[in-house]
Image (cartoon, rainbow, N blue to C red):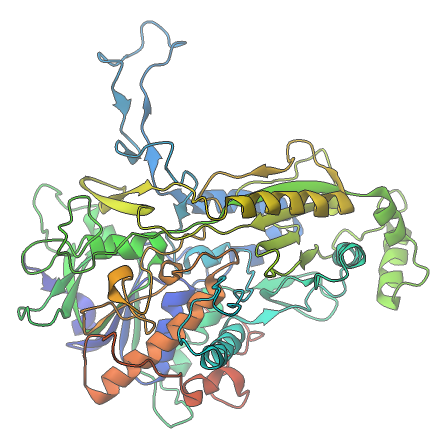
Length: 634
């Protein structure tokens, strides 16, 4: 099948881009920013549209949601598309006798992307994706904790890049410092919130030895004492890359930025190998203009003006934990076989571990209404800091009929009890918007606190995501089917996590009716891992810790799907760390004009301090200043 080159080649005067990237979330954005600032020409494709005025910005920054966080629940729900929905019965007993009925009652409804091969018992029923510039970072919680590191020979959450403990700790320290700076993590933005301090102080009193602290969040307060917070997203990772005035900006070494092009409403369909089968090497990415495809005759493929190829030296697939393996599973080797991941993939597939060993997080949830004594004490200004006294006095003066001491614009609680080796689960004790857990009109949201505890699930080869040969999703890509069963290894840990959550909840208040302690539908955490897992050996992984896919000399992956370990914490910060390493490897390959497949026998190298200098030197021209004015769309 032949295609024309994408018009972007002629428009930009670039016959072959240095790097092709699929996916515009924080990870795709981080690959783009590092490589463009290093002087390379990059083209990035995004299946979705640009749904915010500023590319990839957080939708919660809009004033209407800052004023009423519960209204943001609807935004999240609208942004999520469930990955695999089983078919449902056509039988409706209460139907009008004159209405249409299926002639065979055993038949099922197939429309709206239903998956006939998805079983209910082993589905990740709430696993979903977001297709837009910025991906899920346009509505995420912005929680950016580090993974719990190994203890001796026991691996907890953090993957092992170097077997030597000291070398491994040093590498992760450098990477985490850089990633926090890039995304703008802070633990101080809610210091002057009364509700935040009520929850923080109460938990510190009851758990003095558990290190209770503010939840690390990627955000910054608009101004001192302002009630508004700017939540960070892919926008902050892109930085000033969309500013036309900065196109020729130079880095600290005097190297001018490369070209950066972003194509929206553009599906990365598959990758194509070169003609020489000796070493698998990608030569083009096949893409589809989804807007043009609306007008094309689907019975005649390919259609002019719809499907194109993009030529590049290196290819990065960072389209999320579902779409990244989906694109690879839809690609073929020279014999017409899939790379891997398809239901009928042969044992000799180029990427045999694609979609295997997947992990997700059992999540416990409840909501409480704060205890009477905690609320009463919040209104007792004696012994409180001056800012606290002033806020309560002013609020009562202006609102004498309000029964609560909390100002209407008082910041929400954002607290965590850090994971430990004794209790290796992640905790979010806060008030925020999710696709569930809306407080509703019956209770004042100021006294509601959400508790979300995230557990671990071990990676097992039979827990997998399969891409179907006979069915496609709504976007014409192979339909994912989950075959996932919770592992027994951490079953007791999940039970202890639930008990811990209820203990914490009882220290803070009483359960909000309808939000009693419960385990949520599998997949709802939206932290799917392992789909393109990294490792030290090709036999049980997709790529090495440079994120380079085994056997291929110019193919890299990015995102949460790379994480091979059982993890409970939010994975974005750790995925950014892996992208920092990968981008440096790609840069060196391009600089040296040498592209080789990864080898298990070749020792991995530390990330050079110079590569991350821009993240920690305020005088560096590319330092991530997060309080700059927002950019306009290009």
